[in-house]
Image (tube, rainbow, N blue to C red):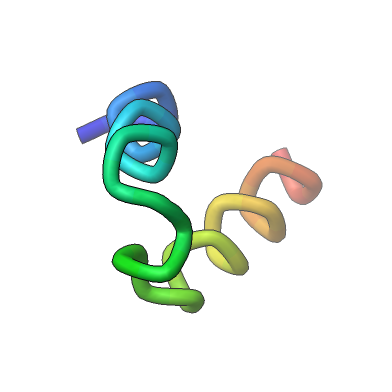
Length: 33
């Protein structure tokens, strides 16, 4: 899965259903790259 897949899932299900670590990892990895 890529970033867009996570974004779609988070929008459809809501942020409460997504593990917080995934969001943090995406943010840190995006900033590092």
